[in-house]
Image (cartoon, rainbow, N blue to C red; front, side):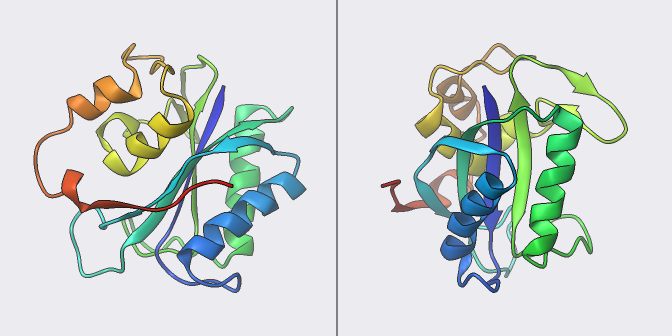
Length: 168
């Protein structure tokens, strides 16, 4: 199972953040990444807490013949086509595409870490991940999305998530 997180908190040429995320699904399909299913869309406060606009986040299960490194490069190219700027960590962005997992692969290279190194601590990834892959197990931790959600610290992040749209 190949898992990709999508997020946006700035408008793009496609429109608002929700429009941008939906257009990104189409762009992935046009670049050889078949969308098998995608999660609900959630509106989520920025992490860490800041005065940035809230994000729209979701997760897609995809299929592709691309190897993980090439897939990541393709995702970065799609981000650039939506005017993504990589100015500093946690900056506002038009589009963020993260390769969360690629089957059971565990990779630690200069350009790619799989599964995504902070996946287990991010509610904005875990809630949509649970929508599309509730029985998926983190390759390093062996935990399901529900088990990782249960381990999230209590705080501002959990209650600051709102479901805004479901897949057709």
